[in-house]
Length: 209
Ligand code: ADP
Ligand code: MG
Image (tube, rainbow, N blue to C red):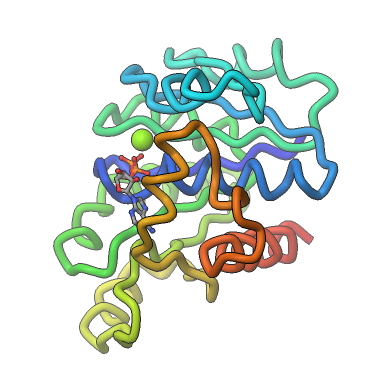
């Protein structure tokens, strides 16, 4: 399985939202997708239980043995999406180790960008010993509609020397409202939210090659 870890130690950056929606987008393309909740708070497990239909298989793996634990459950899946844990640096390091691709959702605010410094250190330390793996991209999350990313935001991000995905998520009520039902924005496949998640999925498949 191709393992995609959605990481940021800052809560509210959109990890769980992107993990569930991206996973659902991939599964709607007929890929077999497993979602791993590495957050001891269990947000994704709560999300999954909010709907009897259980649109995706979710497993909780919130210990530092994640890379090994994952091998035991990922057989037969095309993709594993790891929803990252807040704060716990050792969990992030474990997820980076397990990942083929790391996505760092970050809100377009300088404070949020600066708060990624520790995670970027974890990623670049790993990349140094593994010939640049895993490839890691920022994903701008919760953009306010009709605003352009300021040059300050671009400059703050550029300091990390990690690439930024072109696709982004916009601040939209469809995300919390569908999540509260244990669903995703694909509840309305023609919505703007579904379109932006599809664009993220397409770009991620491109960078995976
Ligand atoms: P994290 O997992 O990084 O803590 P969440 O995905 O749980 O972040 O998002 C935090 C809160 O913000 C949740 O209530 C979620 O529904 C909401 N949220 C996330 N992304 C968006 C978005 N693009 N538009 C509107 N609300 C969002
Ligand atoms: Mg979360």
